[in-house]
Image 1 (cartoon, rainbow, N blue to C red):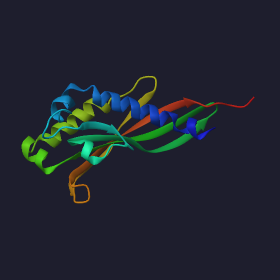
Image 2: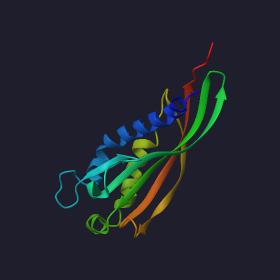
Image 3: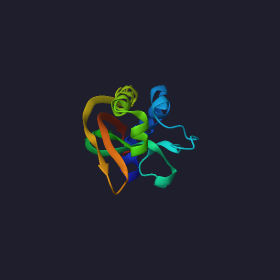
Image 4: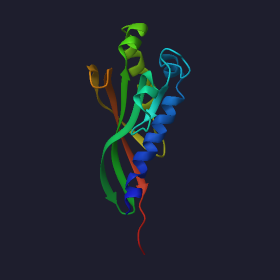
Length: 159
């Protein structure tokens, strides 16, 4: 199986999570508006991103799959993926939003991504989270939330 097929379920999960986050009305209310002159910029991105940090909003979410385990079963490749949603924001944003903002964002992420499922993904629950810490090298607070999913992909076989 080619590397392209190995990565297909992870890409599809990342795309589904990204779409769910972008379409969340709660997150739209909690994150900066792209056109806001003080805090604006892109608020939700997929990692890796080609955007410079200067183009990101004062608070943003970065979405990526962080690991997977594969269990081939005949022509179906079952996988367990971890999806990480990194949350980061500036001190100015933190002061402007107040102490409950981080909890509200985490709740909105859980509502948007924690229940992705159906034919493509089976949610296996949250894998944990990292409390936000100040990172001098990023000049931002950084934390994350992770979720586990079971995916399945039909593998190509040679006749």
